[in-house]
Length: 527
Image 1 (cartoon, rainbow, N blue to C red):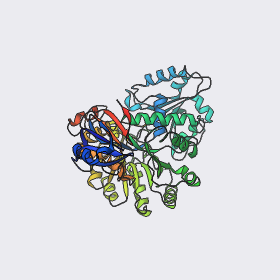
Image 2: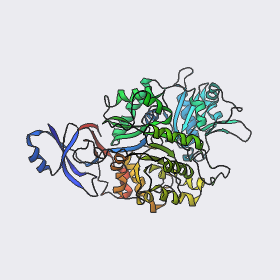
Image 3: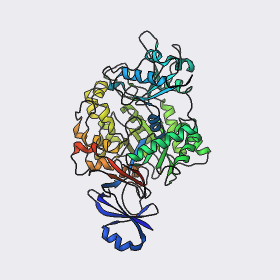
Image 4: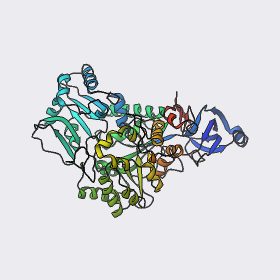
C-alpha cells in the first residue's frame, strides 16, 4: 500500500524545468510521478494516504563533503564560529572554564580570526590567564590549526625544543617562544593527549548532527570521520547504532588512509552499495589550508613570500598511498586547496588511474591555474566544491595569494564548462550546513564580510547550483538511479521549501527555509 504526495510545485531535477503534480510512493521508493488525477486513477485502492506537502518540493539535499561527527562536536561543544572578536573568545573560554570539573579539558570549535578587527591568532598566554589550570584547546574553523594553552602543552610534553613535525608547523614568536598555535600535522602532538571521545559521546554527536542536517533538508551526506575518534571500530560502531536505527539518514563514509587496512581486516569492502550506510573512497590530505598559509601553492604567498605552504606527505609517500588505494580497488578523495597540491594529484591520477566506473575526487580545488583545469577534464576526476568558501574567503584571500591568483581561483563555472563533474558540500563543521545558503553563494558569489560579489564571471545558474546538492552527489557515487532526482525507482526522499528557488530573486535564495524533510516516505523534520 502506498502514499500519494502533492505540493505547490514539484521539481524532479530530471531536466531543466521538469515538474510533476504528484508522486506515488510505496515501501520507501518512488513508484510513479505525474498528474495527481492520473495517479489516483491508476493506483486507486492502493493509495492509503494522501499528503499535501504545502510548498516547493525538490529531491532531498545531499551534502557531498562534510564531517558528521565533527559537525555534532561543534553543536555540543563550545562553538566559537560566530564570535567576532578575540575579546569575546577569551570571555567565552573564561565563562566555560567555570562549568568544568577538576582537570577537565575545555575544547572550543570553529574560531576564525579573519572575522576579527585584529586578524591575529589567540596566544597561549591569553588562554592561560583565564584557564584556571585546565588544559584548553581551541580549533580553528578550517581544522588545520589549533591553539593550546600552556597546560595542554605541558601534558603533551611540548616545549620550545620540540622538533618540527613533517607536514606541520609549530608556531614560534620572533624570540623563539611557543605561541600555542599548531598547524596541520603538528596538531597531532596535542591531539595525542586529548581525551578520546567514548562510544556514548560519538553516538550523541552523530544524532545531534543528523538531526540538524535533516532540519536543513539534507537527507544524505558523504562524510569522513573514521580515523579520529578512537579508531575505525569505535567510530563505525557509533554510526551503526544511530543510522538507520535511530535516525533515517543515508551516509556514504569516506575512509581515511590511516584506517583503510582496518576496514578490510574487519571484512568490509569499499564501493558495496547500501541504502543507509556504506563505504566510499580513500581520503588523504595533500596540503593544509589558506588560513594558516599551509595550502600548497606553486608560487609563494603574496603576504608571506617566505613560504609556499606545506606538503603533508613526501612525493614518495603520496605515490604509495595512491598505490594502496588501487590495491584495494578504491578511488581516492584528496584534500587539495593549493594549485601545487592539485597538480600533484593530477600527475598521480595520470600515472595510476582508477579502474572501471570508479572516479577519484579532488576536494576543494580552490587556488587554481587555468591550465590545470584544462588538464583535468580528460581524467576520471570529480571536484567536491564548497560554494560558501567564496563567501567566507573573500576579500582576505586576495591579500593572501594576490589579486591575479584570486581571480583565477574558485572557478566553479569553468569546471562545469570543461565538463568536470562538480558536487556541492559544506565541509561542516568548517562552514554552516544550509544548502540554500550554499546555493546562493554559488549563484551570487557574495562575500559575507563586505557584501561584494567576487569574480562574477564564475557565477552559475540556480538550476546548476541545485544540481550540486541533488543530482551530482548521486552521480559521484554511481547512485543516480536511486538518489538526487524524483523519478520511479528512486528513494522517497524529499525536501519541502517555503519558497520556490526558481521564482524568487537570486539575492533572496539564502532566505528560503525548509518546511519539511521526508526520508524513506517518513516525515523526519517539520518546521
